[in-house]
Length: 119
Image (cartoon, rainbow, N blue to C red; front, side, top):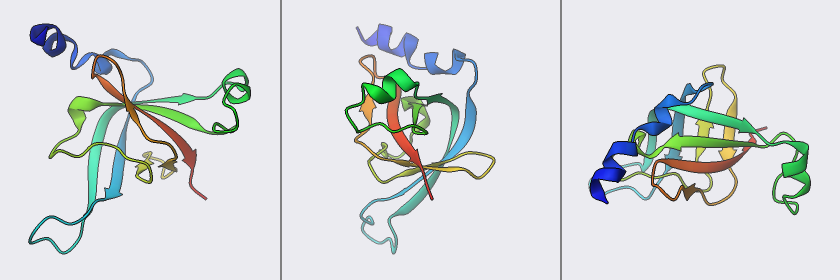
């Protein structure tokens, strides 16, 4: 099973419409650090604007204008994984806040993050 996971670990890179984003957040500072703030460049981030059907089926948790981002698990380093409250910044400066606990897809390839545009 390990070789299968290794063979698909970078499959997120074959999607169309991906972009490079900045992923930022704060975690408790490690010993000897003054701040727990961090920023990572995430390549091959795939945005998905929710459809009206997805919004209507979202039971109030998903709103029009929200976006789901698929972020490649292999892009994260240093034990950092996405969490509610982290942000994703597009190259054009648009900032998206992670609104719900991100989920790792069943194959461990991508983190799926429900986001809302920051105001």
